[in-house]
Image 1 (cartoon, rainbow, N blue to C red):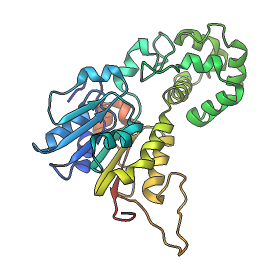
Image 2 (image 1 turned 120 degrees about the horizontal axis):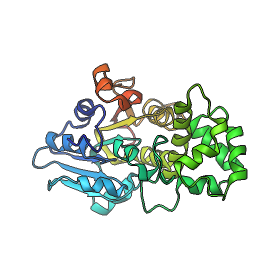
Image 3 (image 1 turned 30 degrees about the vertical axis):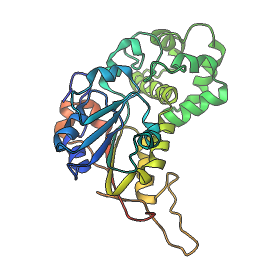
Length: 305
């Protein structure tokens, strides 16, 4: 498996939960360094098939020479449309290792990490028109408050936004260092790294429309999986995990059980196990970035078939 580009989190646990039919068709929503994909391919027989997605062109340099693999240069939110294009109605399993790769974090020219200087970019898809600098320069007060409140849960979001607005279109948001300098009076001295991580997370999620992509995928997942097929999602912050948890335990993303006119509740998935799976202390010691990971597994039920 690829470990220099990105160390796959919960590797064995995710593959074991996902692949029950070695001859089946599986989806890897985030190919990255190919770590999880390599594990899936090893679990498949000669009839098995893997379709992997990644909108980051850097990830496609890690492609695996295996005729069972189809690597798609596209956003996984279009999984439903792509499977229809291939004439595939349902698959045996879908795996999503969400968030950001080690490669993206460690490449200063991508602008994902606050500890490196470089352009304030944060685009996972280099062809996208929206960068973090664009957001800071063009978003209104209301839009910026939404981003920092919802995606970063930043306590002084109001002060931060009112500090940003007067500095729009001055060039102060072009690079990581210039942005940090522009907001330095608002960065708490007690734990500056945590604060900056929250700010950068909020911008990254908005730049890449991560929550919208995940929501679209989760809304489509039930109809794309065969009965007893597995949905395996590894998330890294509470916003992502909440959506996945709501789908698996409540049947829809808003987190409310809904019944028909007869009071019957129909759930598309069974969560197995009921609680999220987290990395072991051993894994965390080897890969500290796995500390915030939560993996949830859903088994597709026969309802709504």
